[in-house]
Length: 391
Image (cartoon, rainbow, N blue to C red; front, side):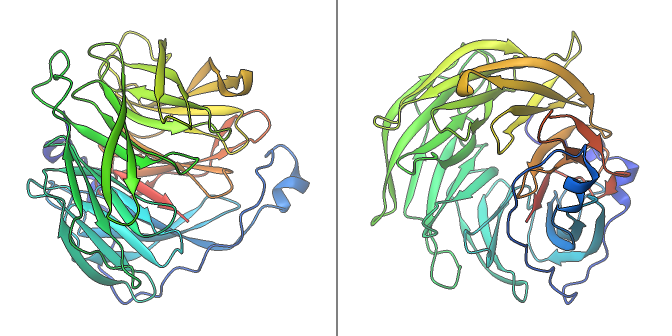
């Protein structure tokens, strides 16, 4: 279930970006703006314009896969993507994250002997890789303070911590925690850590494990770089939680459950770090096979979008009661096959969907008032597209 690669990569994935390690670096992003409705030409005109960096994750070991991290720029007003090359020398960079200072890019190396890699963006120099101590890392994030990198190993059900030096390079791992309890859920042979990130208040580290149907809460020792478990939140058995994202208010979060094709509203207590998982809700995708991938909330907190692999759609929810409720509105065709990951532009005015099987990235304009999605041109070809990181 993890990778869906190899034969699943389609002909569109063959449109690989040419290797171009010495291509000019993308322009630095402009200052974020407040999301606005796309209905008004005057509001449209006030949106930021000009090229911005876009980084694309792939599987280099997959049939039809990429040669490294895809490099592109996008127009913040139109959503148009232009390829600029490939950053080679990084194996299976299936998920990407940026340092808070925007100087360093980090990638997982999703292989049996898992690793994480740092890349300096000013000259695109690979600063080296470090072992995660686990297998098949699929997610990583940087602590808001910029000193620690967290990664989640799907294959071994473990999470790791690495120190980040002044140059952005990674030091040797300071902690490795394997999810040994509770026991794996129905149909699972072991733990499968799928996500790790810092809570909005900065007080806790949250890890989502598909194999144990659990969201773990840790405290980080910011001097030693070690994690101490403080709470566990169980989903219903067999839900297979994959991805958690917070409402801007910081008290509620939304959980995408991959295995049983549901979502759930969760409450969060900043004092204890405890997450409470609510009732399972429909994804609106009907009776066919579907695997929810990732859920996002608009910066204004009004709408949430869920990527559906199988149904190949984006579910749109209205967020109500200050974040405490999700109301299903509709589903929108994603315009690609198997949307593995979705991401907003910094202002939330564009939504990028990385479609793994079709090897494409689809861009939508997001109406800040209604939450309506409008396709922004034709999908951009990107080999085995599994992650899009717009800056």
